[in-house]
Structure formats: structure tokens, C-alpha cells
Figure 1 (tube, rainbow, N blue to C red):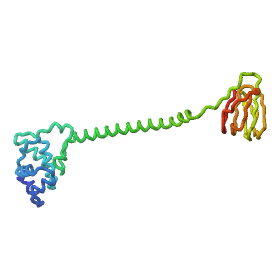
Figure 2: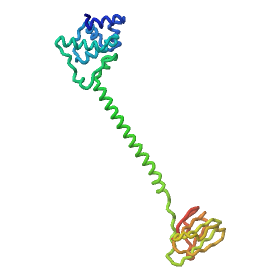
Figure 3: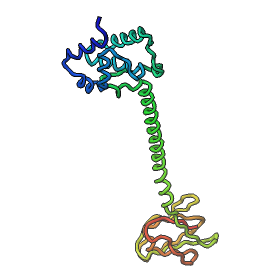
Figure 4: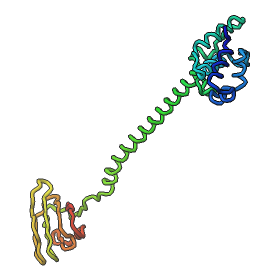
Length: 239
């Protein structure tokens, strides 16, 4: 009955390739392949790696890889060297594919790399979501805050404290005026004062005054002149 090595050598020669060509393709050292074909598996490597190389080489030669691995284990047992399983096999078997030694990284290492990769990726995504939400809510709040800070308060003109006050407006040029009594929202006047026109109103409490062009108005309270606190269009309160 042919040995493992003899069948490996025969299969290689049947394919018409050299040891060097087989080593380049499988990425397994040529001296290892020579020893395998000489039926010598006494390498300074853990049995796990030797078993993986045998599996990879048999697969490359179109042989049954699991059958050759089983025969290798049986041979080790018959020689008094039980096929010791590497401690890493507790976590998963190493499959040496045609990629050679580099492809024989233990499944544990690959699983751990995948685990930490997924964990790190998830952490990055979480941080990005938090930053995005923070920016979104900050962006929504900022315009309102800026608008509130930028919006000027209605100017307030203070009249002398007098229970009986008369408000008089004189137009130096035509302009529209609206006067509302704040206490009951009653409109005292809403119309246009033409050039030189004068209107007087009884003032009882706070008035809200809207003007089209403040610079065209002259304001008096009980005969005393007060500046209109607007140059152009706007509204102000008169206490």
C-alpha cells in the first residue's frame, strides 16, 4: 500500500508540476513539500500546522484532503505520537487553503478581529449619530435665539404723568398714522395726515402708535413737544 508521501508525489507528477511550482502556488515552503513526499512529517511545527499543510497540499493536487489528514493522524498515533490538538483548536479548526501559511491564521484570531472590527465600527457610528443630533438641535435653537437678540424692542416714549393729557400730531409732510389705546385695543385714529394737518386726541393710559414715516411727524403732549422715536416706518408705545 502506498504511503501518504508516495501518493502526494505521484499526484504532483501526474499534474506535471515541480516542487518549486507547487510551493509558489500553495505558499507552502518547498522543503516542507519535499519532506511530505518523502513521508516525513517530523517538522518543528505544532501538529495543527502540519495537518493544515497536508490538507492544503492534498486539495491542491485534487486529492481528498480530509482522507489524507485522517491518515496523517493515524500515522502519528501508530508511531506513538498521538495527534496533539493545539490549544487554539478549542475555539475553532484552522483550515489551510491554497493561500498557504498566511491563510492558516486560527479561526479564533479571525473571529476576534471581526468582533473588534464590528465593535469599533459600531462605536464610530454611535459617536457620529450623537454629533449629528447635537448639531441638528443646536442649529434649530440658534436662529430663534439670534432673532430674539437681534429684534429691537418697541421704542417707548414717556409722557409726563398727568391724568388729563392731550396728544397732538402735526404732519410736516404727508404720512399715515394709526393710534390704538392699549387698555381696550380701541382705534383712536387710522388714516393719513397731510402736510400741515394737525390732529389731537385725549390720552387715557398707554397708546400704541404706528407711523409710516416718523420723521414727517411732530408730537406734543399737553403742549410740550416730544421727539418721535422713529425715523421711518415702525411702531412705538406712548405711556
